[in-house]
Image (cartoon, rainbow, N blue to C red; front, side, top):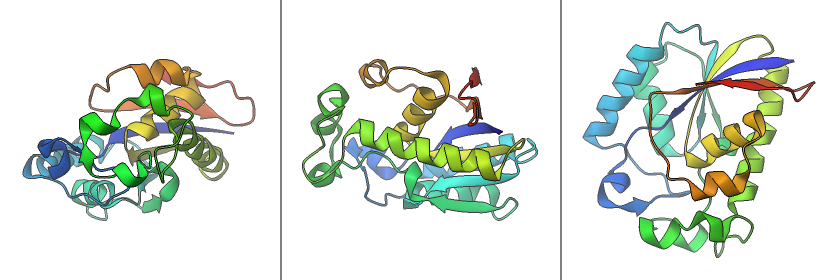
Length: 186
């Protein structure tokens, strides 16, 4: 069983623009973010996507709704959420983004990056069962992309946590559940 996954980050939020790490708070798209979401829809609408899966956090849902406006089936999944920063949800970015320090140690009242990445693995296994041989779009966060890189490409979490996130217009993966032999295309 294999599923082709196109990953797109949720669009820019007002918290991004103000330098805050939203975490599990809902967040809302900025004007730039809504423009980015419209561009995402134009880029992916006719890309052979069977369904869109988005984190259930508002900023990801808003990205999907602006991008596709009901043109594709949309499913919300909590496993695609950002890492839960617990008491630091909504804190200034500098207070939260020492990811290596929180790789295995949960944020106070939250979770570790390893736990967040494991949630994405659960999602992938389910997606491969339901969408075998098809192409899906996933809209998520940094933790979502880390989960894809780790579970599909085998990238160590220590390396992912040490790297600075760099946006680009989509990542493509092929996740093979039965064989665990998965590949990724740039």
